[in-house]
Length: 69
Image 1 (tube, rainbow, N blue to C red):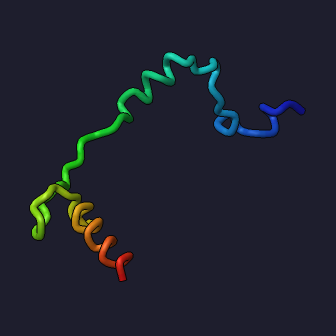
Image 2: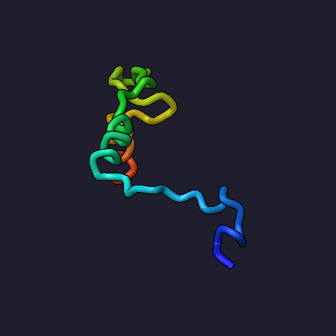
């Protein structure tokens, strides 16, 4: 018995042709980096930071204080 007799045709769904490098590149061309939408200003120093994250400038100052102890 052949494979077609053993399995229904929908189980053998495979591509007929190899996907070319150009087609793969075109498909992934829209997966690039996008601009951040969640930027806010730090309440302590006013520098821009990501929402719900500590400001890099304030973190640097805290880190220096912790290391000095």
